[in-house]
Every structure is written in C-alpha cells, then in structure tokens.
Image (cartoon, rainbow, N blue to C red; front, top):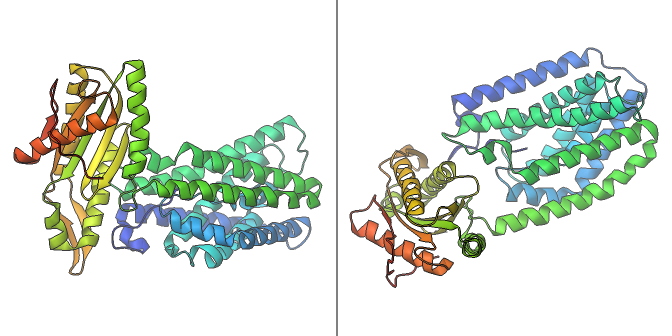
Length: 433
C-alpha cells in the first residue's frame, strides 16, 4: 500500500511533523497491543505451529527468489508500493490464531527488511509503520473469517466463501485507511490518488490477497498444493516490475508528473478525440517567475523541492482526468479535456488558470539548505492558455497559441494569466520541451 513520504531533507520519523508522527505512533502502539494480546493464547505446539513455520518458510523462499526484482521495485517506487508478500500474511490471518499470525507477520517483515527494504535505502520508520498496518489489517481479516467458523472448517460452505471475500475487503480497507490517513496529514492538500492509490494498484493488492486465500485453503486441505502458488506470484512480480519501469520512463523524477514525451502522447489522443467529436479542450502553459533566484539563493536541491511542491499544487487543483506534465526547467503544462467549445470553454479555462496562479502565489515551501531549514515564499507563475478548436485543431497549433499567450503574460509583468483570443495568430516562439 502507499506509504508516507519523508519531508524534504528528512529520513527519520521525527521529520514527518506532529500530525503524521502522532498518528503513526498510535497505529504502531495499537498494533503492539493487539499482537501482545494475541500472544496470551499462543499454542505451544501442534498443527497451528507447523502451519506458522510453513508460511514463514514459504515467505522466505518467495522473497529470496524475488529479491532482485523487489529491490528494483523499491528503488523505482519511493512513494507507492504494494507488497506481494501479503499472499503469506493474509494466509496466516485466515489460518492461524491471532497471536501466531502476528509472529509470522513480524518474521516475514524482519526478513523483508534485511533482504529488500534496507538494501534499497528505505527509511526504517516506513518499514515499521507498514508492519504495524499489516498486523492490524490481518487481525481485522481474521475476525471476519472467525465469525464464519474460521478455516479450515469447511471451505466449500457458501458462508465461509463469503467470509473470505469480506476478509479481503476488510484487510484492504484497514490498510488503506491507516496509510491514507498518515499521507493526508503529511501534506497540505493531498490528492485522492495519493491517499488511496491507483485503481490498478488496488486491483493488484486484491489479486494478491485472493492468492493468499487460495494458499490458505490449500494448506488447510492439501498442503503440498501450496507450492503451486509460487510460480504465478513470481511471474506477477516480473509483470508488475515491467509496468512500474514503464511508468517510471514516462514520469519526471523531480515532480512525479508526466514528462514532456508522455504528456504529449496523452495530449495528442485528447486533441484528436476532441476534433473527431466536435468537443472542446484547453491547454495551459505555466512558467515559474524568477525561479533562478530560488536556485541561486537556496541551491538546486531546494529548487527541486519547490518544483515538487508546485507540481503537487497543480495536481491538487485540477480534475483527476486532467493531464499535468513538466515540459522542462520551471515550465509546466496542463491539458483539460471535455471543455465546452467557444467562449464558454475559454472562460472556464481562464478560471482554472486563475485558481492555479492564486494557489502558487500562496504557497510556502520548506526546504533543507546547508544553513538549515528555510521557507521559500513569494512564488508566482505566469500562465498562457489556448483552446481546441478555437485556437487550433492540432496539438502543435494549440501549444503554439498557449506559448504565445504565456509570453504575453510574462511581458505584461508576470504573475498573470493570458488566454489566446479568437482568431489569435501565435508568435513563432515554440515551447521548450
């Protein structure tokens, strides 16, 4: 599941701030209390203990076989990461008493830390918090299945099957809400996707938990069949890695937005669709004013923090299906599909641009410098806009018109919005990608 990112210049839990720090400590202490309470009834021997040892061994084998892939995934995904080891933690939640399931989860995550997380350079506090959320999610899933008699009572009964489905939902819900709450407290205005992850990421989590349920049923009835879980989960690792690397190739590393090439690929599709259907669309080009002063005063790393903060503001202000990208340097671009054609669309585009301009002007960014923590204030952005089909029917035409409007905004004194007028003849100046 998505995890809280460290504040600029901070790689410790204490750098998160009082809000997320307090919630993280509450979650971790609650997980410890729940685990300790379960240990009171921990069985000394018998089948549960053998199942616990088997699940731990399977998780170790799984991690060792996928160590190289997982380290790449960890390095490539700083903020969003769905852990495929939940196939074993979820199986433990369904099969084992709560205390024994907690022991398995802790052992699984201790091994993950030494083999994957630590070598990938992930902060320890994130690993501890993730372990705590998994402990609580697993306990919630266990309680749901326990209401149906638990496993391995009779997996063929409809009530048990329904309970397993509800357990999957409860595991995802608890984990998502806990992590999303910390992310919400970590930033000023987080977007919905940052809080709950993308649909495909959540689908991957649900698929992994379903495999965990099948592994639990196999262990309860025919334990040797659980070996069949390993090949598909390893193939899934590679498929997820390919998708993640493709995503990284289309993402600007400093801001998390689409890079210029990926943005233009998506924008071409939107503009072509608008031309075919007769609908409207709008393009905004934004340029941070006097950004060189930030770099010269605070350093280029601080400048990167400012770019990331501005990018977050842009994503938070526009709609979820609007396409936001970084063109290079301090220049950003936003594509707004499904705007009304004509003057109504221009007016709506201007309103969005004004909201973006105002939002950036009120932005204060904490940055780490050689002299300590500093706050960058007084930022502003000049914005130029153009619409489809009024200012062009191709992406190049609309970009040229928007860039000409941006030039007018900067020439007019900066911190301004200029939208191309009807029959606007753009200047020959082209955007720098």
